[in-house]
Length: 172
Image (cartoon, rainbow, N blue to C red; front, side):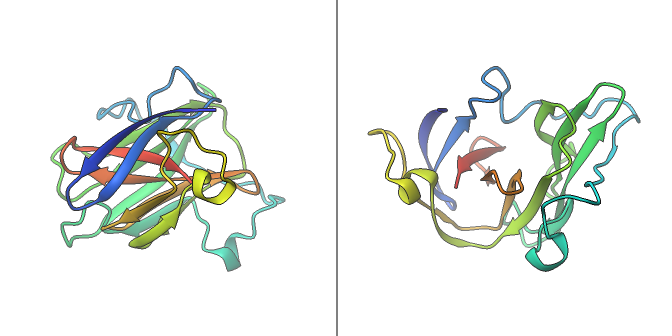
C-alpha cells in the first residue's frame, strides 16, 4: 500500500501526494539539482510489451504542465553506472530546471511517460473500490499532467502544485 496526504490546490483541484510501497523511503520530489553528465535519455527494450507506436507511450513528452501557457517537457533518464532511473521535468516557469520529480533504483525497460490532458480521472481507489477514508476516488486536473508508469503494471500521474512549487503524485 502507499501513504497519502490530502491537500486542496487552487487551480489544480483536489490532489494527494503518495509514496508507493516499492519505494517507501524515496520522496516523489527528490531534488531540484541535476548531478553530473552521466544521465542519458532512457531507451526502452526493443522487445518491450509496450506498444509505444500506437498507444502514445514515450520516454520524452511535451505539454503545459504548470499551466503558464508555455511549453514544458518531461522525460525518463537513466544512469547505467549507478543503476538508477529518474523522471525529470523542464518547466518554463521555473528558474531552476530541470526538476527531478522522482528517482529510483534500477533501469526497468518498460517504464513510460505520457501527457495527460485536463479533466476528471478516476484514481486507483475509484477504479477498484479499495479505499481508506483518506483516499480520493477521483481527481480533476486543471492543467496537463505527466503520466508515468510501467507497461502492463502500474500508472500514476504527477501534477504541478503552484502552492508548494512541486509535483504531487496520484495512483490511477
